Amino acid sequence: MKKNLHPESKPVVFKDAMTGEAFLVQSTIAAGETIVWEDGHTYPLVTVEISSRSHPAFTGKEQPATETSRATAFKDKYSKVALH
View 1 (cartoon, rainbow, N blue to C red):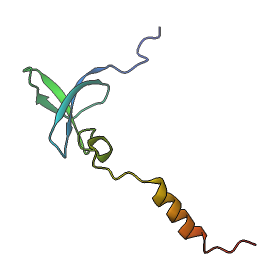
View 2 (view 1 turned 90 degrees about the vertical axis):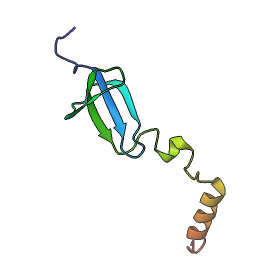
View 3 (view 1 turned 135 degrees about the vertical axis):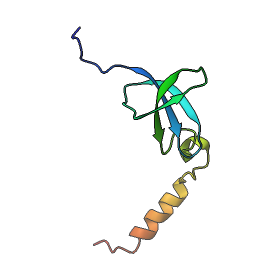
View 4 (view 1 turned 90 degrees about the horizontal axis):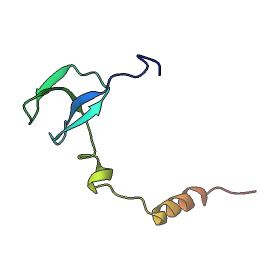
């Protein structure tokens, strides 16, 4: 195996800016800040704008598009076009 091919993976804390929740995971991302985690160790900290804890698709607050509304929108848009 080639040496120095893959970046080093290390524990990193990701903090959701919307909810304030934090997650400790393995990552190769470089971070400019640090945080003292629940276990007393200091880890790099990356603040993200949105995560699975705040994204509407994962929280169930997203309004799903229905096939009926898509079909209606299509018909409304193209029913006015004259086909020759």
